[in-house]
Length: 635
Ligand code: NFS
Ligand code: SF4
Image (cartoon, rainbow, N blue to C red):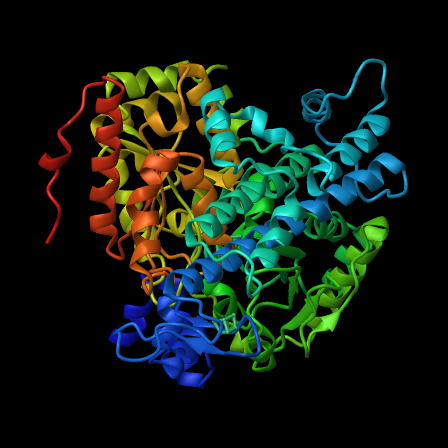
């Protein structure tokens, strides 16, 4: 491997596949990034606008050129509008995923699908009560239908606030009400962003950004939360389990099918289909020892959290997984699936199967997914993968590493149960200072940051300093691969956190799920605040997205901050063209919602920012604290 290949990723499996890519001249996301450089300076600063055909316009950041678009919009308006649209796109993606799951629940309630069933009656009942539905003497099916119907109302315009807002501390609800940012309807807030950012509507950058926060909240406390909760009803509440991770989960002697994307509806029926004795027999007749399902990205997280299905990799591993030559099918649903996978697959025998009519890929085989015929379609898909095993070229198979063990399945319910049924022991450990606080390290990979370096470095520094880390999305995969998500990793934690982890038998880094499952972190934060009778922004908590790339990540960052949690981003968002917007997000917001953003590409420094923040919050609560300035910032 060359120094260049080693410089792109810290992961051995990635480095080896990058080497194969360069030897075989196969294009990767890193090559395409290089070809795009230098990227547009105006766009990087958020200073370009193409919202109407009087434009496109751009603002000169140095002051010599135009300072206003054709319509008169200045840097503040343009940057704020662009950011609001980014948040809306991210919120829309999460929420539309939530709606798809919700429709599956409705089908279950209507009795017109046999592919899904209520897996957690407890959760169904608890949510039905939360939605004000009388649960007495009602059959599960009836309740499922009524709950789905009520939840659909959260998407519309008939409510004044989303149901889950009630989960928040009263103080936070009052604050949002005062600011006018309580999310009403999930779709409504998104549509309103598009309206406000049309030429000639909202021309006050503060007002635009407040609505952008409201829209992000309609994701965090709406669409994503519905996605998580309803997935738990249908597929089960995750419980701690041990699974495996990295490209070593692919098997040379089995049919390998990767499930890539985000929606667990499809992957759940594929898991059911892969158990079909006839398909198993067919695989054997072709000389395979069986059918091996593996996950990629958040579909992988959903499967790993609930079923322990092994995880092949995160965002930047999707092309590299194909390059093993061992993948017989890559089944994709939606989100974060690079269009390039179809091209990469052409260099191997892999067949790419798209499944959602809203997410087609030219060159892929499309099998239209229909939740009412779920398992039947699942079998059709698995059959394609099995058939394709016959086309595998054994001489081209290169499985670059052996898998690493990682734990998953830390839902809020599982964490509370590990604590013995109440958040009290966690609160006590925080009060005593053996755990200083907790941080969510979440989000994507981005080829602009050395793959997995940001996540794992930040996580290591935090646990070393007795900060409990919870992870979701692609961050979970990074940390899992680095071996940080097994109980033995407690040895790498500070003395206090180590002792707590050992007593509970848990790792210092807890896998809480996919990106929509960041809402589990919100629920946990709200539960801690409620337990202590305070607001979330008073707690020693922080969030970080060290390698983020997607619009969804921006929505997540925004709802986390608006919920009162300080958040550090590792990649610059496109806002630096407006000092006013930067000032508001990185400073002013603290006085508005009790939390703000920071941008710090170096994870060593990001860790210090988080440690200082957590100590300040401890001090605010009157807990033993280190003076923030005494924590030195690395050079
Ligand atoms: Ni999240 Fe999951 Fe990964 Fe980023 Fe994409 S897979 S929803 S957006 S890249 S963490
Ligand atoms: Fe230019 Fe204004 Fe149109 Fe944007 S909305 S493209 S700034 S004229």
